Image (cartoon, rainbow, N blue to C red; front, side, top):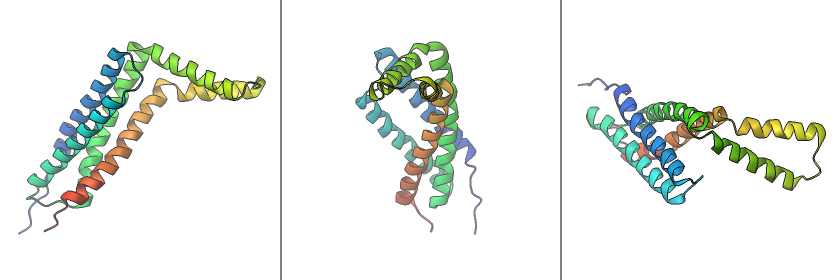
Length: 170
């Protein structure tokens, strides 16, 4: 007897929200600590991310009579990644546009200094074009887009591996 597959939406929304809260918490902790990056926070965040994906995919498997294909694991994981990425991207725009706009200015200045130290003779149109590129890559909207893309990329990889490990086609 065939059973009806459960909906992915509630799982994707719930666990996607958990992932978004994890990302936002990491951004806030780095902001409070006044750091650009911290490998310990990144490692802890990555491990918790894997656990959240595992639990989300595991919940779907339990609701699906303990049956899980890699395709279903990818659907659940990508749904979670999409929800998480959208929320984190929106928060990034708010955070880097309102709460900490000086962060983007610092990154922009560092990028310009690095560029000019590598090419000290740059001038004119080349300098203007390079400045425009630096400004584009250090905008809050570019940062938000990268949050979404990285969420989808890592969500795909983690879901694929998790799905391959938990696979049970019966």
